[in-house]
Image 1 (cartoon, rainbow, N blue to C red):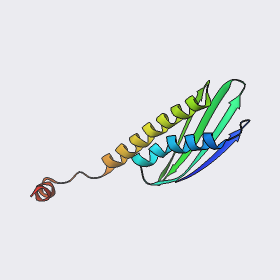
Image 2: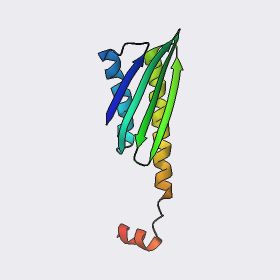
Image 3: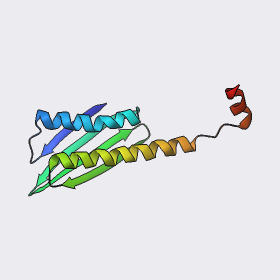
Image 4: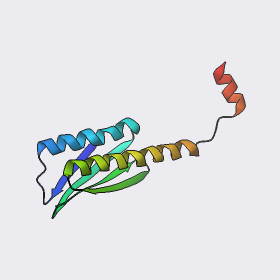
Length: 109
């Protein structure tokens, strides 16, 4: 997974980069077909905003979080993206055809 991290009115320090990699790395555990992640950290007055666009095979997810602290915004962003990826994966699993009873019985034996 490639994480493109950029800052708008904020310097992206190595500590911020490691924190973003660690928080967004949870998404990889849920879904292994990630293409790339683009994350933008922004500071406007006293509002810290973290936005991210995740490209998956077949779709694109977007989330944003605004908090008073940058680390809190990154935490909220990670939670939102993890939930979106979980729902995406469940929908993909539900679209697959259910196994017929004959195939299910053969797999158990």
